[in-house]
Amino acid sequence: MIALLFLAASAILMLPAINGSVFDAMSTDDTMRLVEVRDLIGGQAWFDVFQYRMNPPSGTSMHWSRIIDAPLAGLILLLKPLLGTHNAQALTLYFWPTLLLAIALALVAAIARQMSNSTTPVIAAVALAVLSLPALVHFRAGAIDHHNAQIVLLLALVLTTAQIEQSAGKAALGGLMASLSLAIGIEMLPAIAAIGVAVFGLFVWRGAAVARQVGAFGAGLAASSLLLAPALMSLSSLSAPVCDAFGGPVLLLTVGGGISLMLMVGIDRYRSTLGMRVISGVTLAIALIGSFLASFSGCIASPFGHLDPIVISLWVNNIGEAISFARMLQLFPEKIGAYYIFPIMTLGLAVMALVRSDPAERFRWIVALAALAALVGFGFWQIRGLAAASIVGAPVFAASLGFLWPRFASGARLLLVSVAASPFSLDVVGLSAKPMLDAIFRSEAVGDLSPCRSLSDIVSLKRLPTGRVMAPLDLGPAILAETGHDVFAGPYHRNNDGNAALIRLMLATPSEAKQILSDRRVDYVVTCSAAPDRNIVKLSPEGLEARLGRSETPDFLEPIDLGPGTKISAWRVRK
Image 1 (cartoon, rainbow, N blue to C red):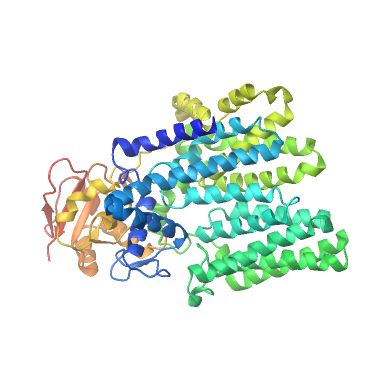
Image 2: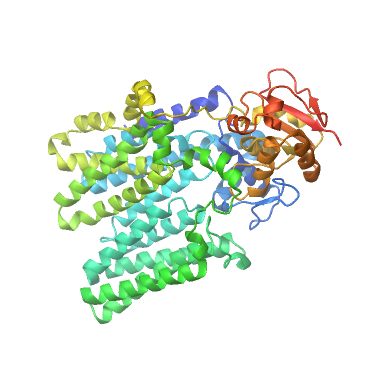
């Protein structure tokens, strides 16, 4: 049954790529990952994750890890002699997310079985996982950025840490999963930190009974972080205040946290009392947090505080995965059920199960609750946390329901109730109620994602002589992947200068725009003629974006015929 659910989900997730092109099924981040992998295969240094063709001539530093680049590059190089470069890349785009989905479902099944000591909720949990729409989008064909790998590692962390009382080996493996996830990206930091706090609390409460396992968790966390650091970063960058990726601040927390757990275990051997564990734990926690604040105080500021206000207003505030609960309630109230109701409902059931569970089994519920609560809390600030929450909640929901109401112990009943409560079913209900919800909540109209973001959208630019392109942010990765051109803008917060330059150009009057193009030595201007940026047009009705949308071409731009059926328009800058 699990195999059939996996095959059905995989087939559905492949349909968009099969109907069109797997390269067009990629998001902007997936496309940028492909660019990064191609650069690595092409000879760019392992420690060099700089994008030299974005925001010329200075380039842009990326905050992504080589951990994902390595297996993707390995698959492409392995398949290239058999299939050729293009087909090797296409097959990799199908295989990688499908492999991760299989691992994720296996982990969901294992967590459900572990939490209930029974196989009864396993099918219901896996069914819930394949109906978890917020998470499932990260396992579609073409999804190679990093979110799916981080979801898999978080599931593995929950599974191994929930068994910490039984196995020091699994405890150490849990520490490895935590550091590996953070080495890929810091999106799961809230859940990982919450699980770490749960392990800390377990040792404070139980002491010597779990000392060996907690010490193994701390050793695994610290040792793996210390090994990953020189493997992913040059020694000169270890002390840099990098707050948006694996670097000095994250290393201080993981290595310091792991060593602190080991020190607590060591102190407890000499004087094993609850009071001493509380004193040592509080002292070490204060020392760790104080060291972090003293060394990297800038990391507690807003992650977008350094950006140009115009970039925040016209880009950051409109990033789909970064919108808040309040913003979502205003813009997409029909999606609230699919994103928020299921994990919150699961939290409530898990709390009830924790209260009624046997003391010897409570920590497994605490681990799941800690991860879920952190992800849901993060999701109220940015909805990206809810993708992991929905799939982590799948085994917790099924196990909780079977535990609390034994009459649901029948697999068929449990499956039926789980499907009815799934994010998919809640999404269907929300869409059915959309007209009513729109009348109650929505205060502004929202368009769909830009139709100009795929590789096929910019094929016509390949025949132009190589140059510097001012194009919409979402087109930046596709232009880098499909052409030899340089681009100024891309949907990445480290590219503040290039993004600000594009936005100011599109807001500018003709005379101002001419000066910007000259200062930046731009060769081509590209717009999405299928859907001009409404926010820019609204803010500056006489700006370059609005004028080009009305076919009012200034004298310093020369229209380029891209052929019929194109979604974009392009102009050559007259020198």
